[in-house]
Image (cartoon, rainbow, N blue to C red; front, side, top):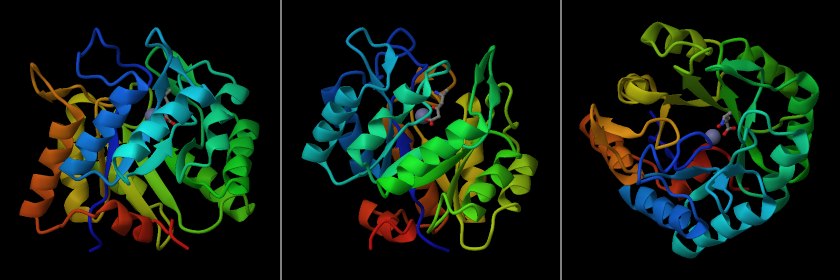
Length: 270
Ligand code: KMH
Ligand code: ZN
């Protein structure tokens, strides 16, 4: 079984500083959080950025600043969000791709998102995929429900996505696929040979779904974007969430991949 890639979803678009004081918000804080996650065992930093008031933005300048802070500190793989926050326009969502990060997220369908709708119509999905292809950015397909896998594979058939295929199963979003072992198997079995997958489960589901994924050969995403608690009633930090997954993986004889090793697994190195 290949080494375990841990992704740290450091900030997201929904959690606020009122929810947890540990949320990194400024570029410098995102840089510090990435280093903390890297030192704890994360190979990939999935990032969003915030404006001066702490609100979610897809501003190219804000991403540029956060990426610079991360790169000064460590060689972690940087994966930008093209999902942003619900309600953002295509032009807003496309912005961080201009910076040519190694990876970016690509959600291949629309999903209810609590009381909101995370809208991803086919034309927008193709537009994002084409931009990633143009800038040589590896997409990570964000799979919020099972129908998003065939939609992702359609992009492959159309030639809009080429090379290694990597999927992130986002489980337990209210409106999306439930976070259960049965649903995880259903998703995993739909993938083509050679594809890699990771699990990002929301809130209290984060730890048990990660524990299911590790012996099944999947990878794991944790972090404050998806879950702010270390355990019931105890707030987490990104670093502690990553460190716990590393310990569990090592107990299961599944060593953790460095960023360099993850680049090879994901086909990011030429
Ligand atoms: N904030 C969610 C609406 C992504 O990063 O691409 C979308 C999201 C997925 O977080
Ligand atoms: Zn995200």
